[in-house]
Length: 181
Image 1 (tube, rainbow, N blue to C red):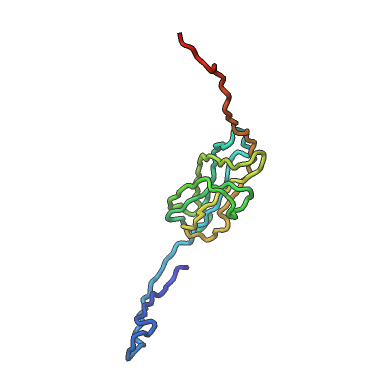
Image 2 (image 1 turned 90 degrees about the horizontal axis):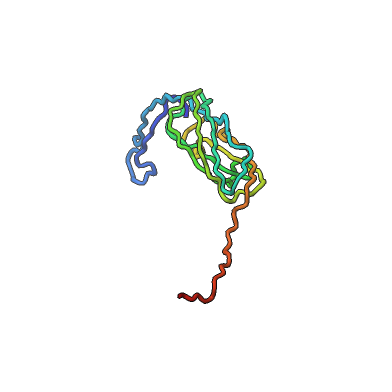
């Protein structure tokens, strides 16, 4: 919707279910003028994470991302940025959600913000394989934007993880008979 005058129209007996002598007086139109701000356009400017993670299984890492509003209007309302882990660099439904960061506007045109979060990666991460951390701004689309196709950024991360410990029961040797004195 753009700024301008629009009309709210009310029609009584719109399906003519009721017989009337004059159907010509069943509509009423009221003009409404909208002066809308231009929409925002959130864009990720940075996504920082370790490029190689070495350590035990289920590692914890810190991820930081930056966002700017390159639109001509303010981002008002609320939205969430989501962080995902994937075997490829696109959101295709195969990714695992790692967390989200709730945002509250307004964010003026040209304004920016950054987020930092620490996440525990799932046990399904394979050793010596490259994955992608993906940030998706306004991922659920709660904030109206002029362009939703530029809200995603991905970075590769290679995992060199130690195998988990293998705990095993050890046989305990004890004398079969104990004599007390």
